[in-house]
Structures are given as structure tokens and as C-alpha cells.
Length: 232
Image (cartoon, rainbow, N blue to C red; front, side, top):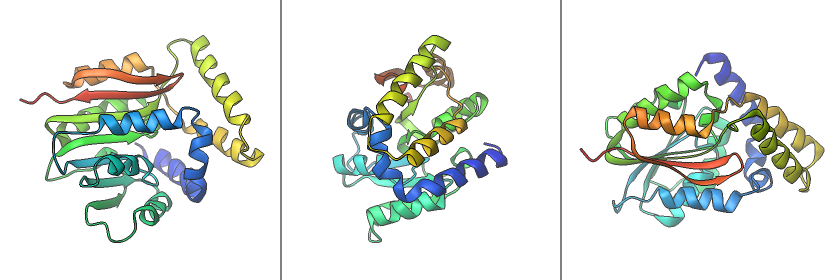
């Protein structure tokens, strides 16, 4: 991710950090299914799995994972310190199994591999080439047999479908009680989006070396992708 893109994303999400969680349910029409499906897919056969949350924001996705496995050891990384400050409030100070880093996850390194790597509504901010590089990086950070779960937004496979997705989303969020200012801020944040079609991203994951690649959940352009690193 280039420096200017990082700065733009950090500024926009720092601005909305305190209101982010309360708005999520209104801005994601399929909120419950989206996060619950993604969290269920992040379960491994390890009693205390090491899980890396890329673009973790306020820790919303990680909180769903912890509900299902309180023993999970989570590492959260995000560009926005404001978002991670909200995550710290969410989880409290006495959480030895939660580590947080402020920074660019595309260059994150770890001396110990992860059982599972997750991301929610973040990777679509990357250019296509950067997405492919990130998928390679994720693959290397995973243990053999490790899982990658990406809950994200995708581009429609044709201009007609993409407009259909956009129109449905706009109609549904404008039917909520979000203020005019909140709606405009949400529309402004979509200018940061660099979405890619679903099939293309699944192909990139397979090319990287992942197996059992699938889109497990789809609601218009909200999807949950799943991929597994071979055991050996």
C-alpha cells in the first residue's frame, strides 16, 4: 500500500472511529450473517489458535471470534490508531491473549506462524496487484493447514451487476436512521474502495497455492471467502 493511500485511509477511519461500531449494523444490511459466518469459518482444531486480524479496526471481527473461542490468541493490526484505541476499550487492559500493532499489515512479519489469518472489510482498499502480493504474504505467514478467512466487498462481475449491488446498498442504508452526515461520510469512504471481482480473487488465492478455496457466503457484494494452506 503506498504512503498516500495509507494516509488517506488512516485519516478517514480515524474520523469515524468512535462511531464506527454503532454504524456498522446499519451500513451492512447482512451484518449478523456476514460476521457470524466469517467467525465460524475461523475456527481451527487448535485449543488456543494464533489468529492474525488484518485491518482489525475496532476489533469487531475479533470479538466475534473470541465469543466462539475465548482461548484464541489474537494479534490485531490496523493503520488507524484511533480504531485500535476503540479496540482497547472493547477488550479492556487485562487481555494477555490480545496483542495490537499500529501499522501496514502488508509488511507485517512474525517469527511464529499463525493458525488462522482473518480480515473484514479491509483488503478491498488495496490495488489489485497489492491484493495478490498480500495473498502471497498471508500464505507465508500461515502454518501448514492454516486458514485464511476474508469477509469483504467485491466488484460486480459486470457493470450492470455492480450498479445493482450499489443501488441495493444505497436504498437499504438510506432506509435506516443514519443521519445525512453519516450517509455522506459513508459514501465518501467508498471513494477509497478498489474492489475486485469475486471470481478473480478466488483465482488469485488458488494461484498463490491455497486449496479448498470458496466463497462460503454472498449477499450482493458482501462476501466471505475461505482458503486453506495445504498441510504439507
